[in-house]
Image (tube, rainbow, N blue to C red; front, side, top):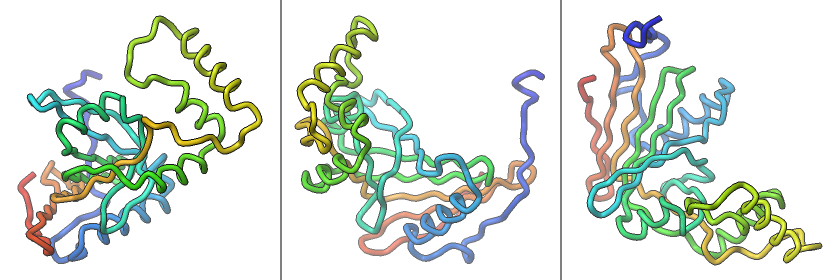
Length: 212
């Protein structure tokens, strides 16, 4: 089949302004619970989009590790491409895509680093191999080959031999995306999809419908 002929008919659910919660974080929590109950594969996987100060975009998949009314948290290497982008331009967009439910959620907002102690607690809760990997990998930087990474991993294993909970790397930790915009997308027939858009106005949220 040609790419132009690939299409999916969306008809599972609908979404209206009167259906959604007044608070978009509560609406996200509701949909997230439904995604978990439906056994969507890795429902916390999200596309994180960043940009350089001159507007060059970059996107990758990361894992959501916490969310509340303060924001949406993920962890990474501060020296990675996304870390460098966020240091210079602390704004980002998130995208959750749950095709089994014919749903998407977009979030836009400013970004800040979370408390270092919270990062340490999360880091030390990870499997030890993941902790070693964080110490070993110069994330996003060019290396000569996989053997370089394996050598760095071996060096880290030797350095932290016998230690179960490794110290937090100085260049690793969490970011919080503080939402200013949400969009909840529900697929509908004839491509007339439902798009419910939230915009923060001070401490309040304005709810509007967008044309598909």
